[in-house]
Length: 277
Image (cartoon, rainbow, N blue to C red; front, side, top):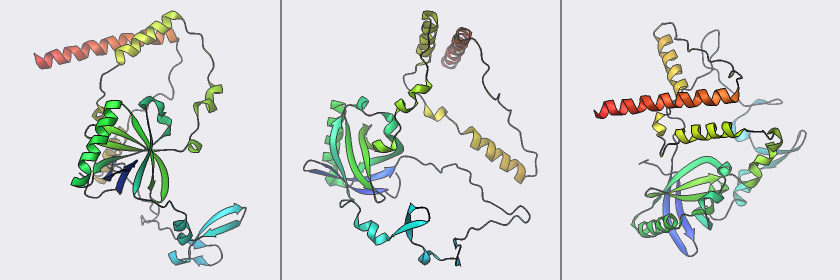
């Protein structure tokens, strides 16, 4: 478990308060390769300084926040003033309603997920009870909380022994599919095309996808490039992919895709028999 919680507070539902801690589910910087900017001539690091066009270089104490209300005109806002308008309760996840899982469009998911765990012995029973009832009723909890000074809509859902917290976008932050509907034309699909496409999809359905199969191949290639250059070796060049797919007849593409799927399926069954044999 992570040694430091991202957030500490309570889940509040009616008069029930459940003490919880939140941990980030993602490790976005793990394995990430970061480059520094260097001067091409001497190889030294490039440094960036904050400057004012009138007074030159400035210190942190010289800088204030400002919002541009018109071209070149700003309203200055102090940190103290921002703190005064923050939400009063920054320590609770307030549940507003319970909803069916399919009632929340994934387009509202911001991509940030936290794991909630009970904080201390006092919260264990109420935490387990809430998770159990939500699982039995197959519902998610729509709630709101304050994260990093900002009030955010969130979603709670049972995940194994834990409750997951998914940070949501507000309605105003999301473009609906209707914004792009005019880009899609109504197409005439033949019964045979529909049947082949249906078969292809059905043969590709798996009960559970193993996400460990997804590899960051670009990072692997960049790592190999850096290692080669650091040892004075010529870097390996990746094979260039075609700029775009070849335009072919849809029916032919479906038939070829289905044949390829059959070959892969047969090879997979043969491999499994060989392993168990």
